[in-house]
Image (cartoon, rainbow, N blue to C red):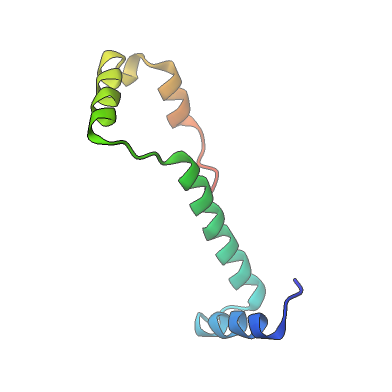
Length: 80
């Protein structure tokens, strides 16, 4: 990867602190960021009323009877 000396030195300093080489450090950091991006796309926040409606929908169609939820939970995690 090409970068300016200031950024390269910053990365090298952090990698040395963790006793890693530059490539391993960059790959590790990139994978962690990728996980954050994926999780951010899958996490949703609800206000109290929306959460109550969500709970009611789940109770009306329990997981044991909900093929879509079972399929979703059976999928491998992208970062595993």
